[in-house]
View 1: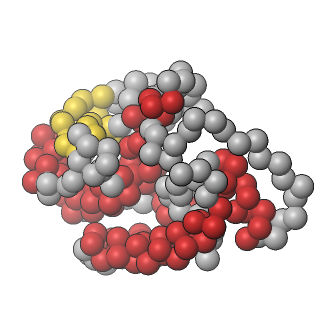
View 2: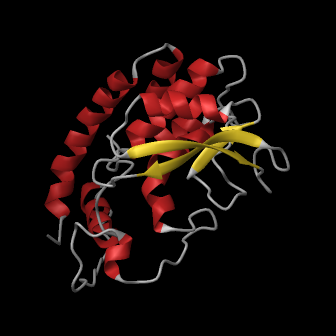
View 3: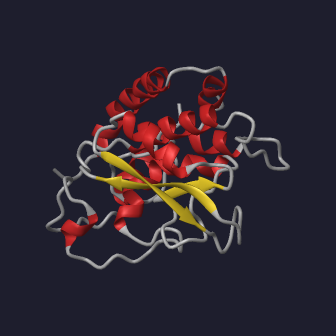
Length: 221
């Protein structure tokens, strides 16, 4: 089992300790403990300025949403790269944004709402073309489940646009989505018409197994 999850809930030092022990790397690892940090913190709670780790991660809000919308990187739907709000919006020239927003909002997913948008990427998929889609608005971070939202959005787009939607397969032959999800099982399940709840149940089992390992390396309350 890969010793990680999409949202692993560890500091970089805790994660380093986990990898060093569980993968038996044997590195001489020294982790400098932080002062004043709490596990319940979001970035804004630290009082520190946000330094984008990537041009496509411009804000803490992007980081909150990314674990779900990143899955669109494995499809022919734009994940918003080349716009001012990468990963906070997604769409394509073949999508009706108002219709997509209506369907997603009808799901009443916890802690999130969707607004129809138009955008024109300057780079990446559909550069220079007008795309319709939705912007993701997190209304309650504690209730928001990005991976579940990402799967739900994928399933809806795939169902609404079965002829236009496609998975991206690079020259190497491995689906980009499979690399992001860590397995081909989720993609195959979506192709077979599985309910998102079924996919999430499988993921929940793996997360529980990882969490049992993760707890051994928590250094902060």
